[in-house]
Image (cartoon, rainbow, N blue to C red; front, side, top):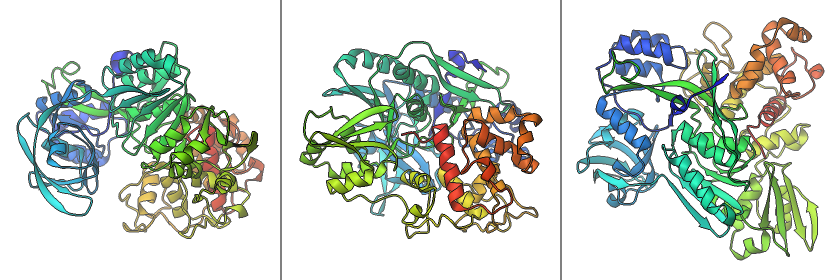
Length: 621
């Protein structure tokens, strides 16, 4: 493993910047470049493509595409330009229902025309953009002073056309303010100067603050080294980000200076926090520099390089090819690909500000308060102030988000008691909806089941029951893993998996990731039971996907190392070794208690999943 130079680490980790294809580069030339640089093997359909559009459609990666010279210039301007942006003045994301408005800039044509957050653009100049693809973005961009007609579906279901002027709108991607003794960074993207803004903001305010808030909501990414440098200002010297190529070679970025502050950081995220935002928030979580609050992030754990005439003068002349070349991992070795960053406190977008405000209180000198230890940091909640300020909803959201074994104390009349969240809610008279299941107490793995439920990683039968002792079908395990990873996939070709089946997207996803395979004859056998040996195997593959150090551990196993697992069949021994030897036991029980051929249960799967996520630090509280 080796460090990348700064030039190479300026990888593009942005979500929405994608443009249309042109034909200056031939299909054959593009295939050659993809074979050399793309992170995964090309699918067979890629070699049958006769146009660039068909080629990139077959590859199926929304972040790998060709750009003309003009498109390439606009792309780089959008990523790096700090003082202004030309367009409709809106942040966007691409969904199956259309292009969603995620941000509106003051002075932009979109805001002045009356568009609102979460509006859906369903057509551009009369041409449908449903489902929305990154390539549709090019049709929105254009020269200053020109107009584009957008067909928009509003929140009330109404649809109308808006003629919007493209304007150059002043921007600054990072703003630093102070709210009392709390320093606040509002970062919209990670451009070439963002790490400087963070460094200067800390230097100017560190003596006056006791905590930091970094707001990365709707921050879709930017440059990887800018995100790493910004992170390093809070976490100090050492590796910040690891990259892996298709051949397994690894690289990392280093931060060489000491941390500029020792004050805890509260990072605010949502479902539109992607790439660079996940590098930063995942790094804060991994290096225990603070906590993350909000909804699960987007889950873009790959980085791209731009191939141009500097590298291939014989192929390019101002045009470029953007290629997914790396998967990235945070300092703890965990990827954010698909799974995103699971916040320390998983709360709704509406509750995020209120919960953050509760945790920024100073330690009260009298009265009643809560003391929480979250990811190694102590926070206080002044209960009297919360009542006076009408923060009941925020307090409810905070208590609902805490895992059942979170470290929580309540001080009343000078006496401090260790209580669980449910007991605190009952004492305060706060009406909390428990995220767990009504039957989890029947299981010896109740703590693990309820922890996963607190992070909304498990689903029951729709009546708040999990049925922990029931046997586990192949479709149920696929659904559990896909839910944990926040992923789905179109048809994988199984003849017994209907496209509209409740488990179809999950089965296809875990099959495409290589976690589970078919049973032969093109079948998946979704209702077939799973043995404990099969459960161990699938969970071992999950752990390897989540953490590159676990994968390295597995790759280094020798036949002698696998000898103690002889009672498992050969294909299960590696996974059994990973789950029991990498960092303690991540299985639902000691290895001697595992019966390879016995049926697996839902509680065993949940317990193992929780143990993996906690051991690797994917969930950290």
